[in-house]
Length: 301
Image (cartoon, rainbow, N blue to C red; front, side, top):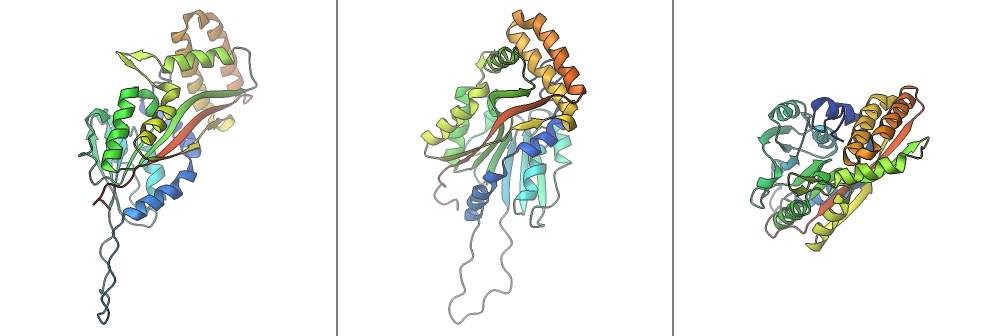
């Protein structure tokens, strides 16, 4: 979706999609995630018989959460207030301007009122190792998996499993799009867009809509439990600006992949944008959220 008017990593695009992302994220995965995080917390031993209990409980354990490709920090804004604290978020992105934006805008407190602190690291996930993730309670990412290659996805799963670190990987495209009302050209545009998502980019063959299947296989092959949940965008009148921007990117990428669609694609886009502006178009863009739960590493909790 990084063509024609919707640069994938532009702050404006990320801001435009944040409300739809928040509505789409799968809350059903939070219960098993909280259960896993609670199991990591240290439990104080009961006082021996005949001795009084300590006057005060030890300070709560800090959750350390790394957000890969954090963009403007929308995952942190959604998730931090839904998990207990205290929390320390480590935001990773290759764009220092996005990092500065994200670092300033995460919530100050967690679901239970405990503090949330933030640090930033400029770079990409290629530097992640099991050692880097040592002590990390959770790794998160949004709309990232489709940009990885098979080898990169395999390496990410290996790193998480070796560290015993759960991963919440949200909003991965599945390749399914539904437009109402439908048009005969919908299927051709969708197929061309999906091929564009799987393109070779500077020698890297991207996973595109095959990312969730690749991630599931990579984690399960290493013994992790993988849970998935549908997380579709449902775009209609209130999201007209996002719908229009998404349409330009969707059709633009399809035409870039298949230049023979150019003339029909331009007319198609014009019709779809007019219907969007008139409040007569609704779009469902299917995504999947994935929670991978590796076996805890002995001695880590």
